[in-house]
Image (tube, rainbow, N blue to C red; front, top):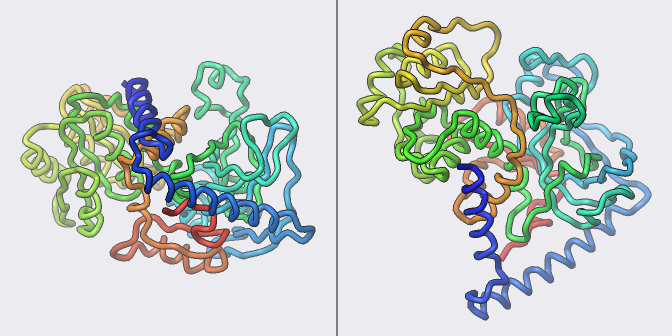
Length: 409
C-alpha cells in the first residue's frame, strides 16, 4: 500500500513540476524569474555565512524554566556530515516538556542542551565523502541518527536502535541553533516549490505516516483519531491519502476541529463531563460504524481508555501520544475483544514519502502553523506553545529572516 502511495505521489510531483510542458508560458516565465531571484538570494545568503565571525546563537535549556540564548562554537563536520545554516524549527510537545519538567518520559536533562528537532536548513559546507548535497541546497532534517550496524538497524528497524542519537534528547543537542552539523544521509533536498517551513514539518508528518503504516491503514479502513494537534492532523492527512473510507477526528477544542475540516475529515467536539464509554458510543453513532483503526494522539489516561473502548473487536488501537507517568488501561476489555494495542516510536524510512506527499500539492502543511517567531523571541515562542490558547497549533521559530530561503511566486 505504501509503495503504491509513494509511486502515486512521486509521479504526481513529477507531473506537476514547474518545468512540465502543459504549464502556461506566462507561468513558466514567472517561475523562471522566481528561481533566478531565489538563486541570487541564496548566493547572498551563503556569502553572509562565510565570514569569520559567524553568529551561532542557540536556545539552550539549563534547567526547568531556564531557557537561555547564548553563542555556541560553530561545529566542525566530519567527512560524511554537512554544516547547516538552520532556517526554521518547529516547537514540539517534547520540547515544552523538557522546558517545563526537565524530562520527557525516561529522558532527563542533566546538562545544558539545545532544544528543537523539527528543522530545515541550508547546506553551507559538506564533508569530503558527501556527493548528493552541495552548498546552497535547501534540506529537511531527519533528527535521529542510528548506529546502522546493530541487528535492528540491519533489519530496517533503525528507529528502534538502542544506540540512536536523537536531536534534543538528552544528552544530544537539538537544532535550535543558527549552525548545526548533521549526517548528510539524513538531510533531504527540498524541491524548489516546497518551503522551508514545510521542510521542518516533515518531522510531524513522518510521525503520522509511521503511525498509519504501523496500524496497516489501507483502502476502506474506518479510522478514528483522538486529538487534533499537529500529529493528529498529519495522521489524518496520511489516512485520507492512503484511502481510508471514513475518518473521524475528535477534540475538545472547536477551533482545531475547524482546521481539521479543511483536511477532509468529519469532526466531533468532545465535552469534558462525559465518561469514555459514553463517548465511545457517541463516536460510533457519529461515524455510523465502529472504527477498526484508532489512533490516540493525546496520551492522557482518559484518551487511552476512550481509544480502547471505541475500537472495533479485532481492530487496532495505536498509541501515538506520549503518556505522562504510569497509566492504568482496561486491558481485560481489550483482551476480550482481541484488540491489538500498538506503540509507535518515531519513524523509519518515512521521510522520502513525507517529502513526496508535501511536494504533491495535495497537502497544505502550512495550515498547521499558527505562530511565527524569530529566534530572539524564543521565550515568547515557548510560552505560546505551552499555553495553547485558542488558535494555537504549531509554533515555528525562524533562525533566518522569514521567507529569505523560500521560492515564493
